Amino acid sequence: MAVRISPREITPEHVYLNRRAFLKVAGSALLTGTLAACGVQPQTQTPARTPVPGKTDELGDPITPYEITSNYNNYYEFSTDKRAVARLAKDFPTDPWTIEVTGLVKRPFKIGLEDLLRAFPQEERIYRLRCVEGWSVVVPWQGFPLAKLLARAEPTSEARYVRFVSIYKPEAMPGQRKYRTFPWPYTEGLRLDEAMHPLTILATGMYGKLLPPQNGAPVRLVVPWKYGFKSIKAVVKIELVATQPKTFWNTVAPHEYGFYANVNPNVPHPRWSQATERRLGESGRRPTLMFNGYEEEVAYLYKGMDLRENY
Amino acid sequence: MARHPARWFRWLGHGIAWTPLAWLLLEAYLGRLSPNPIQDWTQRTGRGALYLLTLSLAATPLSWHPRLRWIRPWRRTWGLYAFAYAVLHVYLFVGVDYGWRWDWLWQEILSQKPYIWWGLVALLILTALAATSPKAVARRLGARRWKALHRLVYLAAVLAVWHAAQAVKGNVLALRGDIYRPVAVGLVVGALLLARVVRRGLRHRAFVRFVKKRFATSPPP
Image 1 (cartoon, rainbow over the protein chains, first blue to last red):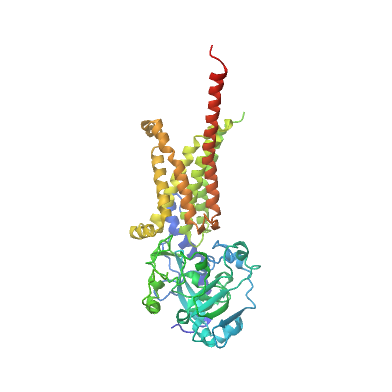
Image 2 (cartoon, each protein chain N blue to C red; image 1 turned 120 degrees about the vertical axis):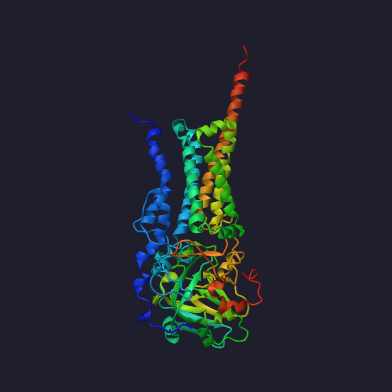
């Protein structure tokens, strides 16, 4: 499992902020191919994949530049435009912040963010994040296993599922005012064994610093083997329940977004295939891996289940 | 003396047609595309095709105005631009995004994704129209058959709108999600088609009136 690591030891910021590398990858791959025919030559010509120097995930894939992951965000609370979220979320207030752990537990509690950071040592986890829309990134998160937080509340024997609730703050979240047909606040859910799995974390930082608001500050869930929408942002409430809770996207479009939402190249979305994905910062596509490449760690959770039925 | 508008409009007409691509190239060059640039390219060239097709459909109704008759030939020019954008759009999807991986593409098309098919049919129609666009080919085809074939542009436009509407995140029929653009283009295309129907009806009535007046009211000598 991952080791504890101080922010100083983490790859220096300039590596993530390597704007030149990002621009080259994003621009030149396409430009060289398509513009040459129009007689326009971009300034530089580089191979399609320019690896960002630094760390990789356990499969050897480089970490996605910070500029990309912090400027391309699915966060409808702010906007449906992924590029507008960072700007709109800039001043989102995350202090003070309290998380409530409640429901079927012996010791319900509320904890402020600072106490949370003190009580649960932060680890770095480099995870792939695969969006249901067909793109993916590799992110170095700082966080801690959700299991530790749940253990502190001591779930009772009736608890079967965990329900997560995101903040409802329309005055600071324009999307909550604008898109009124959505069932705000955002909610998500996991089976208790999924929630207790060591890969499931609550993240408070990424790339060696605090989470920026557009990525779910101050604390978010990260479940790396599921599609990104399961990894709920800006969590304020964690409730242990006995039955499968209602979740946001499953309520909006049940045929398109299931409760389980495990990354699965063999089960297509009703409108597109999930067999391939675009890794942001690369050109072209790559095959999507079963359970997003975490099959060895998590496949046992779904033994005997029809994953086509439980998409 | 002011020059005839048909002359100076040549620059504007081509300029409008090049704008979507020029804008895209400029933003790419300045590094202002999103972190998912392939998607930007594919979506925006597709949108370019749709806009040019709409413009092409607008040329004829505009030319009904006696002072705008000269705009009529632009339906062909803009139609050809629409075809070019559509080809670029498909090339980006097949060649750049999927890197000619037919196995992946096949999976994509098979996975209950009908909107690809609507787009494909629209492209086939535009291809046939572009191929029969040179005057020599049109002459060989004969005016009647050429006209019948080129009426398919209406179908292509409807299919292209539907293709775009289904590709967005949301539900156009329920007016939910990110549907503003396809609905707007759809309304414009609908209005342009409706204009033709209305005009036909009016002209028919006018013709009937003319015949009645000519042959019924004034007795033959």
